Amino acid sequence: MTIILPLAVVQLVLMITAIVVCARAEQTRGPKWMWILIILFFSLVGSILFFLVGRKQS
Image (tube, rainbow, N blue to C red; front, side, top):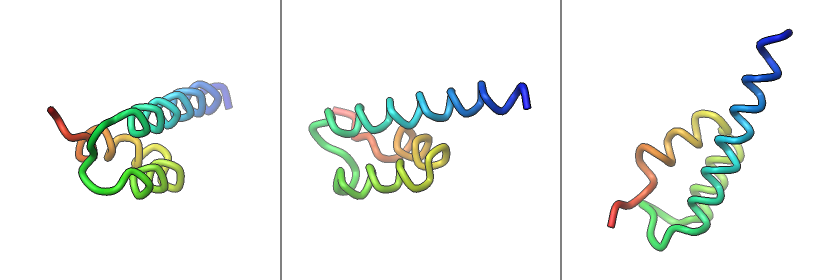
């Protein structure tokens, strides 16, 4: 039980960060709405996928 709360906090922070970065990005690989849905529905995996695949480097 003591490890679940810190992991949940890390997951929540990562998810919020991914949504903010996605919303502020000029371009993403695919539509922004799709990435936001992926981040929301697949929270940990979706956030990591966005940072690895979804961001377009300028």
